[in-house]
Length: 132
Image 1 (cartoon, rainbow, N blue to C red):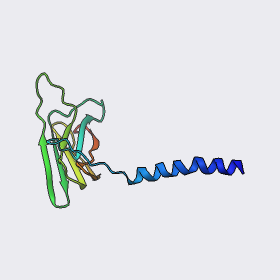
Image 2: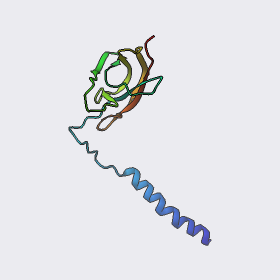
Image 3: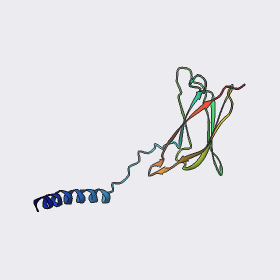
Image 4: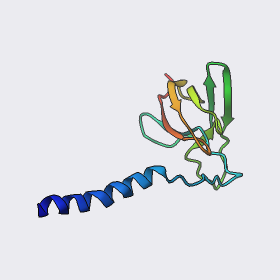
C-alpha cells in the first residue's frame, strides 16, 4: 500500500508539471529588422577544400522562378566564407553556383521550412570541380 501511495504522489505532480508545460505558450519575439536567410552557402574547391566563395555567383530558384541571386566580389582585407540568399522564403529550392575556372554546380530539392520569425536557415556547401 505504501509503495502505491508513494508512486501516486510522485507521478501526480510530474504529470501536472508536464501538462502545464504543454499549455503554456509564450509570445514569439522577433528581433526585427533581422530577417533570417533561407539558405546560407559556402563554396569550396572540391579538390583542395579551399574557400572559393569570393568570385562566385549564386542563384536560388523555386518552381516559379528565381527567388534571389548574388555575386560575391572579392573584398581586399576581408575573408568571405559564405553568402546568404532568399530572405524569409520557404519551400523547395534549387541552388546553382558559378565561378570562373570551375564547372557549374547545382543542387535541387533544398527544403526550407518556416518559423514564426521567417525561414529556418539551411546551410549548404557547394563543392566545385575545377573546369577541364
